[in-house]
Image (spheres, rainbow, N blue to C red):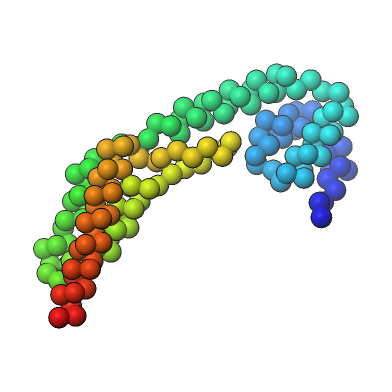
Length: 148
């Protein structure tokens, strides 16, 4: 069941409707649809609004498509240090490394239009995959050492 926002939308100024139109992803679909009906009812020209909206989306695409560049050495150091503490270190390295490796290898962020972008550069993703796989090996090796 959709909520009726028509009365609330009638009190909005043209500028407020413009902001709703441009940032439609920030609103519930039923609200956005009723806002669009109010815009049509007022015979407002949305061509300039659409241009502004596209410019915002393009700017966002440019910003989000530039992945963060983390040094692979930083990622590897976080993984290697716990190995110097024996079998518990292997388990610790496995857990910490798997979390960090997965973060760098698989993290994505979502744009307003639903497009998904990798958060980290290809180089950092490759190091993250290596750390993730090596961490799982370390975790199983450390657990095996603890059991035996």
